[in-house]
Length: 114
Image 1 (cartoon, rainbow, N blue to C red):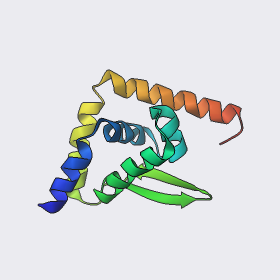
Image 2: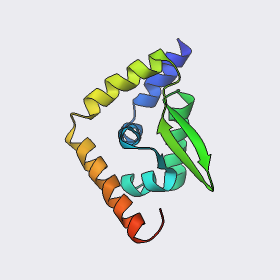
Image 3: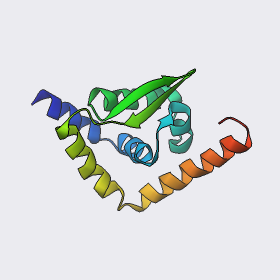
Image 4: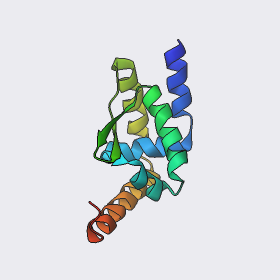
């Protein structure tokens, strides 16, 4: 029951839902997520830690970057994640977030950061 409570609390926040929506599009580093959402990197990192601890997201080190991606740790996490993402995909805000991430991608490519 404790892990379910942790997972539901992790999903009960608009910022974390936005992070999940972005990570459903592709893996990202904190700096990309912070740029798109408009919060500081430490704030985004705290939200990501809750999603990692809840078993929805995993983090891998790539050079000096930590890359976050969706990776449900078990069937329960996968089912909750799919339910949430199925609703998020219907939201106009989901499309706006994906477009913002695409614009950030293009900016970084233009500036030679990727």
